[in-house]
Every structure is written in C-alpha cells, then in structure tokens.
Length: 417
Ligand SMILES: Cc1cc2nc3c(=O)[nH]c(=O)nc-3n(C[C@H](O)[C@H](O)[C@H](O)COP(=O)(O)OP(=O)(O)OC[C@H]3O[C@@H](n4cnc5c(N)ncnc54)[C@H](O)[C@@H]3O)c2cc1C
Image (cartoon, rainbow, N blue to C red; front, top):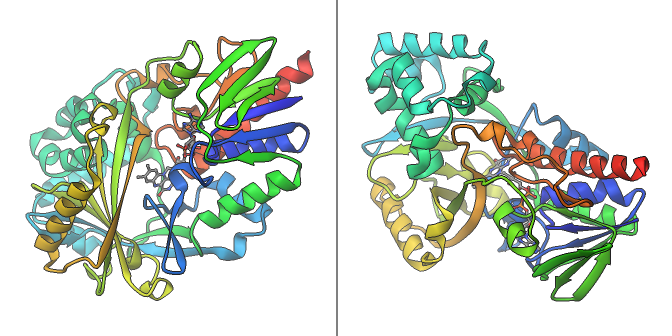
C-alpha cells in the first residue's frame, strides 16, 4: 500500500513514521526543510526555533518519541519564570510574595481568583462549549479581574478574535495542571533545538524506506481509483492520502467536505541583544499599547552561552485575511522600537517569521466542529493542529498524537478490507 503524506510538520512526520514500518510512504513538503511550525533558523553556528518552543512534563507522547529516537539525553528541564508587563513595568508573578505584590488586582480579588481556579478544575469543560469566555469570566469574577488580568491574556493569545473564544477553552486550559513550583514552572527544551527531533524523525522514516520530498508545494489532488498528487516533482500516484496541511488549503486542492474552521496567523520576531532584556523572566505577557502581546526571553530559559548572544522573541497574532499585506521590515522596525522603549536596549539583528495558519480560533462551538481523521472522500484522511489531540492547545505533543492516530485509523481501514 502506498501512502502519500502532505506536509512534513510534526503531524505529517509522525504519521509517516508510524506508516513506514509497514507501508510505502512519500511525504511531500512545500518548504525547503521539514519541521513546519516547529522549524528553525540556522544562525551563527546554532539552530533556533522560528517560533518560541518548549515542552511540558505531561507531554508523554513527545517524551516517548524522544526516548525512542535516542534523544532523551538531550532533554533539559529548567525553571521558567513568568511575569506581566504593565505600563512598561515588569511584575514577575511566580512566588507567593510576587503575586501578593502585584498591584493591579486587590488582595480580595486574588483570593477570589485562586478559589475560582480550584473550582473550575472540577467542571466538565465540554459542557461550556457554546458559552462566551468573556461573558463567563465577567459573570464569575466581575469586570475588574476581567479587565486587569484576563483581557490582556486573551488579547495576547487571540488578537481581536478574543471575544469569540469559548469558555470551554479557558476551563480546559485551567484544567491542564502545570508543573509549577514556588519559583516558576518547570519546562523542557531539547539541546540543539527541536530541529534535532525533526532530523531524527526524517532519518528514521528514510531508514524504513520512506521518502521525503521538500520544496514541493502540492497544487492539486485528484482521485480516480488511485490518488494523484501534483507537485513540483510532477505527479505522484498513491493508494491513500493523509493531509496535514491547513483545512482551507486542502479545500483548494480537492473538493472535500470539511468544517469551517477559523484560523489565526502568527507574527513572531526574534531579536538578538548583547545583554539581557529582563532579569531572569522567560515569559512576559504584555499589557499596553505595544505591537505584541508577549515577550519571550529565550536566553532566560536556555543560557546565552549556548548562543553567544541574548535571544528574545516577540509574539503577536493576526488573521489570514490580513497576512497578504504584511511587510516584515516594517514589523521588525515596529517591534524593535517597542523593545527599545521598554528596555532602553537596541537589538543587534532580527528575523521575522509569519505563518498564515498557525493555530485554530477556539471559538464558541469549536468542539462540535473538530474534524474526524476520515473524510467524505474514501482514502483521504486529515490531521493537524485542528485535530482533537490539539485541543485546547496546539502543541508538539498533540500533533505527534494526531499524526499517529490518523495513521492508525488508515491502517485499521486497510485491515478491514
Ligand atoms: C508561535 C507558536 C509557538 C508555539 N509554541 C509551542 C510550544 O512552546 N510548545 C509546543 O509543544 N508547541 C508549540 N507550538 C505548536 C507546535 O509548533 C505545533 O502544534 C506543531 O508544530 C504543528 O505541527 P503540524 O504538523 O500539525 O502543522 P505544521 O507544522 O503547520 O505542518 C504543516 C506542514 O504542511 C506544509 N504545507 C502547507 N501547505 C502545503 C502544500 N500545499 N504542499 C505541501 N506542504 C504543505 C507546511 O509547510 C508545514 O510544514 C507553537 C506554535 C506556534 C505557531
């Protein structure tokens, strides 16, 4: 059985890895390198993710895969501290004392917030899929906590679409227990970047006889008995197709019935500095009039000695309809100026990455929309950041599970014939 996998991000590679044990697999990827959203820049002698990445101690499938590929010794667990930048002042929010000192929420509101978190962990989030997150927080906790705490977080994560977000999403996020101690959260990273994982997956697929074709955007898919996939390398014929690309892109390649999923787009800046921007805080949510919703100081997580410089990401979100008019140079200047205003430090260089379909908008009713791996076209399967394992948060772990589950659904169908 010959299977064509479209897209060499983590979902596609995970599907291909699973299938290549038993079947002929060809992965067709648009970009020059495999990796998708987890891909990297090659800089002065090192690799660094285009979009900030870390892993969690509960990412079981990712950790199992790293072990299986002999990469477990490259995993580093470190404490990552978080903070809130409000009116250009940084408030670290990790220790009980730091939280007590945070001036934008009163002592009584902090107690209410803590009680709310404990209560909401016991709720069945799926029952709240049709309720607006903004309305529910205002009802539960009042306008002040909403405005001073939740609104900047929601805006930072979803841009102006934050009003559409389902309450189920927030409850599911709160329910994910973090590995947080009194100093900060314990997060993981892969020494040498997550590129190491991608390269090992590619190697293993190839050792199993699979093929990976890069720089080859798929232009059309047709089915007449077998599937024909048209790309730069010509026509590839296969018995089954797994698509891991965004659903609106697939719908242009073949007329398939898929739910109308709304996506967000990411704009992520990477800036290099000679000195640290902030003291020991990795993740900073930003409130105020800035062109980004978060600053992620990577070298306050992984030491700067690994890179010989200090690396800082800026994160902002927009929508696919806005992406065509994006000019990376002006974004770089805008973000760079804002970083300079906040820190009085000037970046040495920058790179901007833009992804049109970087995540799903978990709007009201989204849980009812999540597509099955099987589609209405027999033999065509879909998996990716929109699949169930990536709810309520898309992640490397979720994409690895989605890829594997999709490959298994395909193999089950073959065995049933
Ligand atoms: C800003 C940001 C930060 C993140 N941070 C984290 C984090 O800290 N921890 C974590 O676990 N996860 C994080 N993630 C999520 C993680 O990166 C994704 O869940 C995962 O990489 C998605 O993999 P995928 O294969 O499902 O999708 P993608 O990576 O999008 O893969 C799809 C692939 O299809 C290719 N493609 C598209 N169209 C075509 C075509 N026509 N023909 C051929 N190929 C095509 C694309 O080039 C791409 O390689 C982050 C994501 C973003 C955007």
